[in-house]
Amino acid sequence: MIQTISLCMITKNEEKYLEQCLNSVKDIVDEIIIVDTGSTDKTKEIAKKFNAKVYDFKWSDDFSAARNESLKHATKDWILVIDADEVIEEQDLKKIKNSIEEGDFAGFSLEQHSYLNKFFEGAVKNDSNFGLAKDYQFYIPHFLVRLFRNKLGFYFRHKVHELIEDSIREKGLKYKKLDAVLHHFGSVKDEKVISGKAEDYSKMIMEQLQEEPESARYNYQAARMFLGKNDFSNALKYFEKAAKINPNYKLVFSEIAKIYLQMNDKNRAIEYFKKSMRQNHDNPSPANNLAVVYMSIGR
Image (cartoon, rainbow, N blue to C red):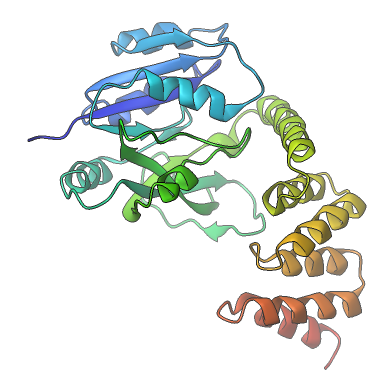
């Protein structure tokens, strides 16, 4: 039996990006579900041109709540989740269609490339030939489960940086990496839009942290938020709390070391890169960073 796909999206004032997004995936989806959280532009009009089913939803400072509302309306075998500022290349659409016929997995993660015009920590040099992406210098890669089976009770978690992966794992099911790229242009939007979203994200991260103060994830995210504001004191505070809760969470000791480098405290940076090496034996990054610091001081 041929497997069908529901496209599930949440939107707010995405008239600039929505049409190119829907054009990129319309040929592989069997229905389009859009949950709109208060658009005042032409977002909903554009969606209806693609015969999308559009539902209004009151924004509650919770991305997972909006995502999960969209899942409720999906009627097809599989769900593809995509944002209005993302597109998928035609060659990868075929991979998506082929993957859902396999039958062995509950979901698939796609590699999101978030494009940038300047270098940022974790960025990779962009050598893409894809038309919309080729003019950007860098991107940050990140695997996210955005394709998964419907009607198995999966749901998103976390108010911000929402994920469905935990829900899949809790049911004892598996997901697989798919060699397909989700091209994401949200990081190169209008600066006012980015600034507004950053403030919203900051608020939600701190709200979530109040609810779960012993979460390594939320302490880490709070630290990253303060680091983005060059507030090293608070960034250190929350990174250190995350490290205390879970020393193996991401490369948290390396994050602390990098802050000390920016504060020109190379001795403390060396101390934390060494801690990172002990916690992350299989990752060469802490050792490489430590070598760079040693070279800079002639050791």
